[in-house]
Image: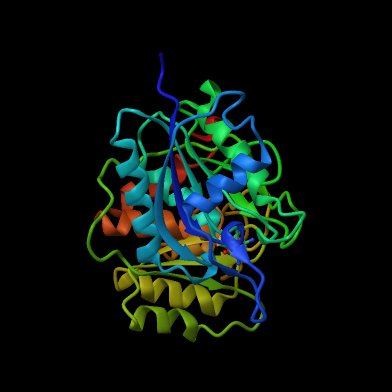
Length: 324
Ligand SMILES: NC(=O)C[C@H](N)C(=O)O
């Protein structure tokens, strides 16, 4: 009979939070979260009670994570999957940056067994807390044969969603996320999760009047990569393009995403600051991955020493099947 064992990795977030006079803070550990989920449903695991192995990794608000913490979580997921008895992994995580950490895990967890991230929008000591039901649903998702080979999925307030292209769309609704589109490719980085220092990549938001000096500052602080959350379909001011050109000449990899939730980023506009000009300056288009996930990918790629061509290839294969 197939294993029913689930590895539950807890990292903090609202799902583990209690309300205090100083605001909600994560306090619960994995055993308490399992108890809450079991109390919420005797149906954990779709009618059978799976064996749950708990891993207390951290108790942090996800907005306070560092990049190193996100790699620690990725390492823990890969480590949990090293146990052949584990049928799937569930990670509880704050919703503010779940789209980043879960995407990072998707890059490294090559195993076909399900990995499901879940969290909550309401602290666990509220009577209407959504966390326990989300954990129940995430465990069911991790045990569902349909999840095998599906890549990392997210279960928060509804049906499972694919991690690629996912972003937070609501600060308070129980259904916190949407996806830019549901069929994005998964170009795997065929390397172990790095143990040491990872490359620094900065995200820079672009807007009318943004100082070109923000890019120079990132270069001066030794960024290995810069992700631009550009306007529209990947456009900006000509002064920014000039700084991008200088950054690229100094070996910094610049990737263009957008601050817009939906639609493709593409080289359509010129005029000195258009995406056509950014590409001419040496920037790489992230057609579909938005800035938070593009940044995770660029950190992984730069840490692995990927060449510019490999990075271009990665982003082109991160699109829908028709584009690959
Ligand atoms: N709903 C949440 O989990 C938000 C919280 N600030 C976090 O990301 O940890």
